[in-house]
Length: 505
Image 1 (cartoon, rainbow, N blue to C red):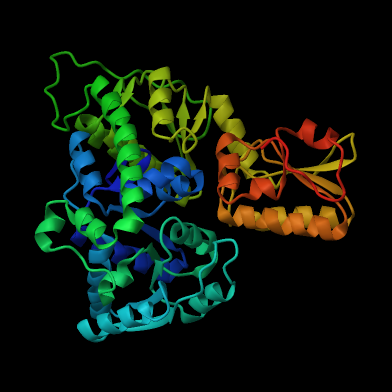
Image 2 (cartoon, rainbow, N blue to C red; image 1 turned 120 degrees about the vertical axis):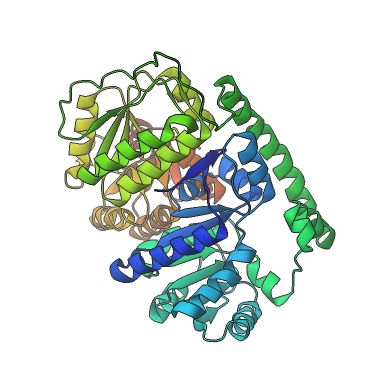
């Protein structure tokens, strides 16, 4: 089972380089047999700060199959949170190590991104360093946004059928691109590697080993590229420091700084009995506190239950505190359940836990319900066919957007809305139930907006949550799409034929 520590809402795997490589072997074995892509992120402080402002990136990192600590600030933070990471597992170190492993075991690697010629030179250097390394392909597409990148890039990767895809587009573009096409690439592993190709070929030089080990590599990079990096480092230092202090203080208030198990009192408090199940899915009661000292028995019980059911309900009615390690364990549980086609549910969450989830931006990652009938209703609804189209009294066709508007659900939305627009209908896409908007979802909205204009019809987006609206604003789609606060506003506002103005954004 994965051992994770949550830092500012981003789960970081607690592992060494050797353990990371062993997990890559497992990913490749599974990917070769099933076609499933495993996304790996090498996370530094800049990733974490970007995720604070970018809901799409945050969700991608939360759902990554492996997220390693690329920067020393994360290692230092883990020590203060009481769950010390063994050290950095950086992209600059992982790529050569993975190339060596690939040469030994016959894996093929595709080098994607970086400036023209850099990826090819990096591939050649690694082939020379590790004889027998198979390069499935090399491609450095011209710069463009995720939504505008040429489709031929995807086709080139699919045709090459690599075992490992290294994507050097920079964060967050590389993470979003991988997530956008994960369902169709059929590559066992995809890793966002940032500027690693530049380091391999010597365009960017790495700091001396003593600076790397002492956490001063950022100083060395700043000296090399002061104009490009100083603003980013100042920004990251301020935001990371401020929000980490808030997390640390929350953990301190719960007296969860130490991971050392404490001696139990003579009469330990027993966790409350779970409610009498009225649903066919297992219910596991969590005690007053879930932290590093009592995490192992909880994990054993939870994973045993997931062996019998893809769904697991956690009764948090008595729980008052979760430390950073416990939150990481819950993220890992949710990931396992969702991989099996199920989910993890929180039942009757108390105010202290709600505050922690909100602070660490995990409130929308976990599904939360007040009672068991609500959980049952949600599962039954998710198992139903796609909702039928609803017609309003104002001549608009209302189509509900999916809860997760990503590459998996986007084709259905595209088909439904296109059919309505082709009938000259005016369409409102109701996003009130959408908790996550991925790049694939945004690309679909752009296509549909263009189709509506070509047909002389109208498309409006309604009911966006703050996270969804923020995601659209980051790529300036709020200036392109007609966005309204709710369905009523979208169906009653007059249509401007020359230009559908964005409202409510």
